[in-house]
Structures are given as C-alpha cells and as structure tokens.
Length: 449
Image (cartoon, rainbow, N blue to C red):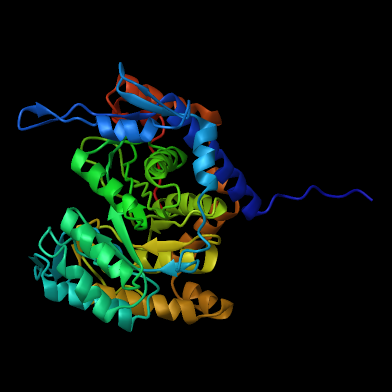
C-alpha cells in the first residue's frame, strides 16, 4: 500500500517558527547587541557605566562590552542559560487570559462619530472605575488603563488593591512608587511593575528608566518589559522581522534582570507593532497580521515557559461603532481569533476600551468589549459558526486568517536568516532607520487583512 504524504499540523509549523525566532534572536544579540547611547542631561554626559558593569559582571564571555562601538554583545549559550531559569508555571494567571492594557494617555468620552469627542486627563476616579471594571468583569488580571501622568503613582496601589484582588500590573517611575509596590506585595497582593526602557532598535532608553527597572528587580518584584518596534520605521517591515526584533529586545531586557537577580519573574511584553512604511505611517493594530505577529511572540514565550502578555483585539482610529455583538468589527474579529483559533498563549492585553491607536481609553467601549468577550467565551463550536455565518465580511476574514494559521509560513517567511543581517546592517549603517534599507522597500505588503 502506498501512503500519501501527510502535511505537518499547524502546531508543528508554529513550533518550527518559534524555534527559528529563538535562534535568530540570539544571533541578533550576538552580532548587533544592544547600544549604550550617548546622552546628555543638563549639558553633562549620562553615565551608563553601572548598568554595563551589572550586565557583564560575572558572565565570563557571556556578555561583552565593546567600548569603541558602545555596544554589549551576548553569547547565545548565555541567553539560553537565562531562558532556562524562567518558568511561567508559578505565575498566578492561567493561559488564554484576556485583560486590559495600561498605555492610554487620555480618557475618551463620546463615540467620536458625530463630533461628540471629549478627551480628559485621567483622575483618581478613573482608576477606581478601572478597578471596578476588572472586578465586575471577573477578569484574571488588571491594569490601570490610562497612564496616570505621574499624578497617582502611590495612590493607585491603595485604590486597586482595595477593590481588586487578582494580579495587578502597575506603572512605577519613582522610588516612592517602588516602596509602595513592595508594601502591597508584602501584604499579599501580586504586583507586577511595568517597564519600557528600550528605544528600538536595540538601544537603551533614558538612564532613569533603566535604574527604576533594576531597583524593582533588586526588590524581588515581578517585572514586565514592553518592547515596541514599528514595522518599516524602527523595525523590519516583514511580520517575522518585526517579531524578531521585539523578541530580541525582550531577551536583552531579561539578561539585564538576570544579572541583578536570576530568580526574578520577568513577563514578556514584547509588542511588535505593524504599520505602513513611509514618512506618514498608519498603524495597523486592528489587522489580522498585527494579531498574528503578536501571537507568534506569545507562542514562542509559551514554548519557553516564560510568562507572556501580548497585544490584540484593539482597533484602528478614534471612532467606536456598534458593528457586531455590540462593539467594533475589528475587536470581535480578534476576540474570535484568540479565543477560537489560536492555541498556546498566555495573557492578552488591550482587549477592551482602547481607541486612537491606544492613545485614548473609553469606558463605554470597555463595557461593550467585555460583554462581547464574555459572549464569545460562552459559545460552543456551533455558536461560533453561527456568529461567522451571520456576517459575510467576518466569515471571509476568518477563513483568510484560518488559512494563514494552518500554514503560517505564508505570512512568516524566515527569509533564510537574512533578516538578522538586515537588523545588523540597519543598526550599523542607517542609525536604526529601517525605512532607508532596501529590505523595507521590497517587502511593503499589498494587502492588510
């Protein structure tokens, strides 16, 4: 009997992609490394010497500083050693958990559709409302979904922990905020501090941001690191390339944390952001491509047992419409992807309330999004099929996405490792501007789902 050749399952293909991503990220950190910037404050050079000393001390040849190029390079075996120390099994949030995000700068009132848009600075009352949303929605974790603009860094802890008991992601930027985080941690609350200290590609941001991260690690606080390159801007244009850079930057951040305390819990918040190329880029955060790129990073983290929180289910633009299931089309489409199609992921942020490419947060939209999320989570296969059948556009998009999910190499071409050298060349020759590399011009996509 002649047996027909069997195609590999989607899981096998995603596993292969994830292994490629891990290998290539190590190559990026070996050949490009991370840049120690030359900055001045009040006319004086900023000294990153203590950070460099922390990263390289006791590593042998694991982390090497080149003072001529001001870059720190990491050996692949050293990065693997750090990865092996991580585990997500002690992290108190189960897999496939939807939750809020914590990036918006303003509270949006009104749909924005008929000129009724009003933007407000966040107040303490908005933090209370966020805590109530998380509690009443029975969500597995909480953020303050509008940046406090440094006004309520200490107060946020008391408000959130008095209302909400599950893990809480909080932004801290001062020693007072760290002290408050430690105090509430010691009272039994699970506090994760959020950080963003990389300027893509592969460059440390302001020294005080790095210092706050190090101090949180020294205190044994779980830390969450966001890296956010934009495709065709400060990151490669291709879906695989932008995922690679975001993941490599996270691994570099994990190396910094490991040098301070090998036992600290660090959450992968890598956020590869899809957008169009050119001088006036349009963000594509609501696209299927954007969701799948974030899924690849999340899937890779899951494979390595690293706690991971990626981005999805947000929409493009400032207008909130009642298109389907009481909320926006792109939100529902992404909820269905993550709930019904994607497997092997941990946590998802930005799943409700966000508008204007995450700049604004709407409580009206948040309530609608949470209701849609719970409705979708309650459906069986027949119910999901019914939702798809009743919306032609959604059904078509879902089938396109399903074809990509079953054969992800259609979207994620590894480019035979060449994208590693695209990153290295752009860092070395174009000051990190990927718009100047031929790779961007030859890979501008013709279609965004």
